[in-house]
Image (cartoon, one colour):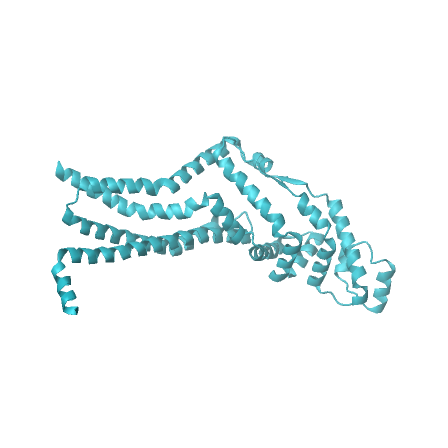
Length: 363
């Protein structure tokens, strides 16, 4: 009976030693995704910060260039594609500053996390676009000046300049974006360009809100949403609590094994050392092998969205896996340090006379 208990204890300890690093990797990668505070901070820093957003928008516009067939749309995209990342940052800082976009991000993801815990099939996400549209209306002259600075058109000849001036700079934006005037006339020129852009924006009648809930409802049936939400809850539970369950199993294994006083040192040293090695190995696999394969999978399977968005998705996954790998390396280093201290402690407990001799000799 005692032999069976010890075998069961060794089995449970072995399972715990192997499974605990995996559970910690799951907790620090997938588990962090379900932390609203952590994920919102990651999104602000890694996705929606001005430099990151400017880089991605430029990449999306450059990719879109190859797909455009409409001349007017093509011209607008061509202008935006000429802009450098620095110019994109200028545009975002002026037309979509952090004070406008940050509340939208916070409210959207707060509602998404609340939805995970309620019984509703669809999240109640409705994004108001009025503050952004109103801000854009107030800054159309800046937008014209920005677009005009990106195109860098040649100066008009004297005859063309007189004709353009007589028409009060016309009533169409493209000719103005493709023309240039002396500095003495530029303010009036830019004012007219801003007025035309404001008129175009008013005629376009952009929606006052984006009803994300309705968009999802039209594409995904409620049953599918409920199944997905049930799966999300299960993943969240296991990613958050699996490591605790494994610690209980590990403790149960130690209890069944019932090590003698003399075996405790060896058991702790071997267990900590084994877990440290597994954590180092998992950290390396997560930050190297997994990322390489995820990159191939994302670009092969998720083909319906622009490559720049796929790259952003990969960057986010890389961030979470990198965070988890760093955590495993830290815990592994702590365990390895514990092994060294335990080894010294065992040596002192087993051969105290040796250390007393060394101390006496040193004195």
